[in-house]
Length: 234
Image (tube, rainbow, N blue to C red; front, side):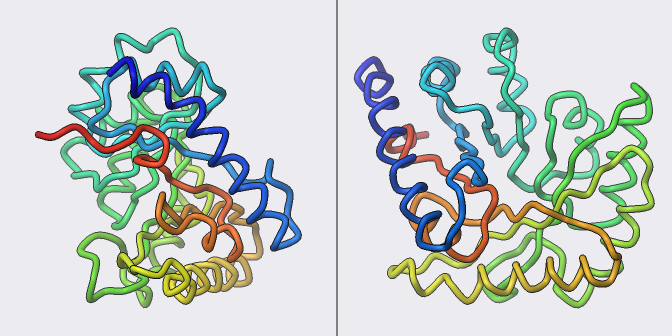
């Protein structure tokens, strides 16, 4: 692990350079793109190394895994994102562990998150996860059901709907993911027109294709292995 930790800073430097170039190609500022370091399966030591190197947003996939690591990192103050699928029966725990829930995909889950946030009189930032390719993904709301879900979420007083998230199918050529990213952006734009308000966040793009996602409007990119290296074997 020490060698991996020592490489995190240099990996991050290269990723930030790639983010800057991708932002320039789309006439955007690199600071408008948040790098969410996906730290699932990596130990607290790696997360601390990334934080020391400047990362201020981290993504975890599972409530239970993050519960095990969080006590070692309680002194850090980044934003913590749950990026994996969340079961309704874990909503209460998740609302206390994370600042963002990036994978809301049904009304029942949204209501349980709202109830949990109400217990502490706080609000929780959320993204709706959308199926941009229903044949390749099991989680996420169907595109046809997105407006109704968004309508329900915006009425919940302790949730703040910030935008949309999607995980497109893996494409050998990252450029082949472009239509999926473009689709998510258009769905977000349609929601903004429907509701007459801004939903500024588009969480899309991972280690393999985040540059294409930025070109298509991503405001958050979720990068794991390109920062931390190969994931530990189970």
